Length: 205
Image (cartoon, rainbow, N blue to C red):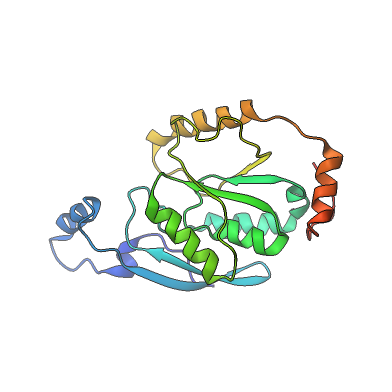
């Protein structure tokens, strides 16, 4: 498995001059041209081709290490996914959602910062792994949620908090989603899971 990518600097350019800070400022202004790299990453039971790119103001362009740890945990506890309607916050490259969709045929929607580039990159990664493009929501934490009555009953996320200033916005978003949640019939969830031939053990929590 390739090492998870932490800094675009280590992949796309070297810091050999005193102009590094100026170059980084240019990147933040959107002047620096995006560079892309595709790598094969090992997930439980499969390899995925994931494209990352050189810059994003909230680091949604990279595949972070928590994704691998979380995917392994979900693989070992896959019954938690059975029959669920899943929303992933901070999807980034979409790698985790793609893994779950391919492994367990789950109903999953990706979401991330209101940004066309993130959405297009997730769509690219879906197609690169022979998967139909997943539903995606462009949404900035703390703002009004685009759906007044969300129907997801499981929210997942990994490696999504890097900046302290985003904590309150994330809490606001989670509070809305939890308050808006309306429990569904558990038996219906099991039936839905069986109809989709989910690879989990058939339990519903």
